[in-house]
Amino acid sequence: MCRLLGYATAGLNRSLEDVLGGQAVKDFRAMSVVHNDGWGTASLRTPEEPPYRRDGGAPSPETGTRLYKTTTSALHDPVFEDLAQQPARGALWHFRLASSHLPLILENQQPFFANGLSFIHNGDISDDQGRNIIENRDFPVDHSVFLSTGGRSDSAVFFAVILEYIGFGFPLDEAVAQAVRELRQSYPKSSYNCMIQSGDQLVALRASGRTEVPSRIMEVYSGYGWQQHAIDYRVIRYRRILDADGTAEGVVVASSGFPQSEADGWTELDNDQMLVTSNRTGEFRIETI
Image (tube, rainbow, N blue to C red):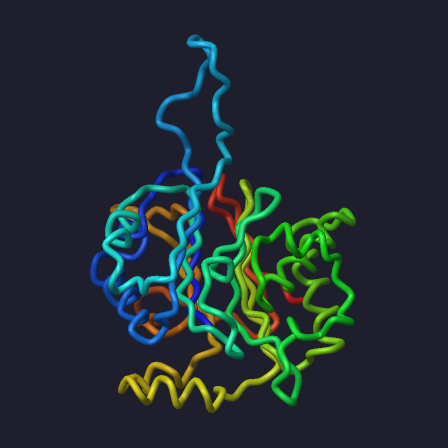
């Protein structure tokens, strides 16, 4: 159970502070008071200079992903401030609140990364008795694909199912939709809010089997005096990224928990809707799964 944020630009390198603004970054980071089980980010950066081979070395691919994750809370990790100022043409940010007593180990920190894809998820994929999918040995997921995610959690299973559909030839957005359809056959009430980033696209999905806020979330938030921030816990919103002249440069999409007013351009995704955007052009569309 986590907080998610992702953005994609029109092929331009923009930092988290450029995209949100200084105060909003502080408000976003403050959520790690509650979501304090670690954090991570995965970013794509267009080189300032084209790579070349004059010295004999092969250049790194332009779509290479920079990945950072830790079991330390973002609020207490000085690296957060540095990375929030690092420009990228696309990025994912994730604050973790561990679900179903899953271990606080680096393997379970997100973003997960495999096959050139970065993935973050907010949800607890469990049945009505509270048994997490990770305990279901009969769930039909390819074990080698699961291991390739590097994770050991329900979110890693979700990512593995998406990777399987990509392996079957589905495009990224449809692979996400197909994975949710499959998982819902066994876990219809779970939350599948997620974001996945490739070298060309960002897909952000709001898909929750329940509309009410989980009692555990309300209890945890209340323990920190943050209960007012949990009212719209499952909501995901998006807004355009604008330059100083008001020209659109891309889109940012985020879980709730920090100020996201309509006056500032934020729009709520409906349940079972996904935002699909290019981190080359910044153009996006809304689809229903």
